Every structure is written in C-alpha cells, then in structure tokens.
Image: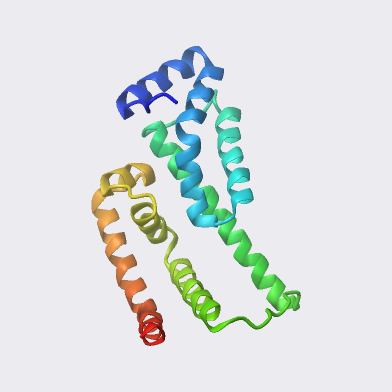
Length: 193
C-alpha cells in the first residue's frame, strides 16, 4: 500500500482530478478517506453493517452531486463532516425507534447475567447515555478529539467552526461527562476494591 499523500498534495490532486477525470477523482477520494471515515462513523454508531451502509451513502452522495458539489473547505473537512452528520442522523433515528419500541412494549426483557457482566454493562450504558446526552456539536467535538485523536484545528476545519468553539465545546463535554459519570466511577471503584 502506498504511503498516504500529504494534505496539501492530496487536496490539489483531488481538485485537478475532479475537473479532469471524475472516476479517478472518486477512486482517490475513496482510497484515501474510506478507512478514516469508517472509523469516525463506527465510533458513533457502533455497528459494522450500519457503518458500511453509511459510508456507501456518503460516497454515493458525493458521486451523485459531483457536478454541482460546492466545497468551501477541504475535501477532508467536507467528508468528515458528511460522515459525522450521517452517523449522528443514524443514531437519532435509532433512538426514535427504541422510544417507539418501548412505548409499544416490543422490547424483550434481558436474562440474568453475572455480576461482572452487569457492572460492565451498566458502566458502558452510563457512558453511552452520558455521550448521547451531550448536544450534537459537543458530542461530535468530543468524539473527534478523544476517539479519532484529531487536533482542535483539525476538528475546527472538519466541522467548519472556530478552534475557540472547539475548545469551549470540549470543556463543556468534559464538565458534563465528569458530572454525569461521577457516580459510575465511585461504584466501579467500590466494586473493584
């Protein structure tokens, strides 16, 4: 596998290919961004099949709108934002479905599990609930920073916001998560020790 192109070289190459060879443009776009975008989506949706479907949708939309697509930032920033938005929409649709299932009584109760599994599951659910409770932009900033290890500047570029907004959103996310997960951490420590 060839080494990844530098950001500037890649952006220049994509701009050239988009105007001269659209199939090659899509091939380079796909080869360079499929895996990193998949990681972003997977972190949000936590479902491999859904991740594949969402990735296909993102690339299909770019292909379908290639003639009229207006990108005011970089291709990288545009694709990260599109992937993150697709993942967040998917999660929101899933929440609405769960709420409907709970309202109509179609969810089956879970069986008994061992203490260890129960504690692990409760902790995981608490973290997931705390992340889900964050406002969408705050959650996106947190996930890109902590799970994708992007810098504040990279996040700002990807989400088309200022680095100061990224900093503020990270601070807010950390405060909210610390507050919501303090009880979980105390319970986990008491269970471990």
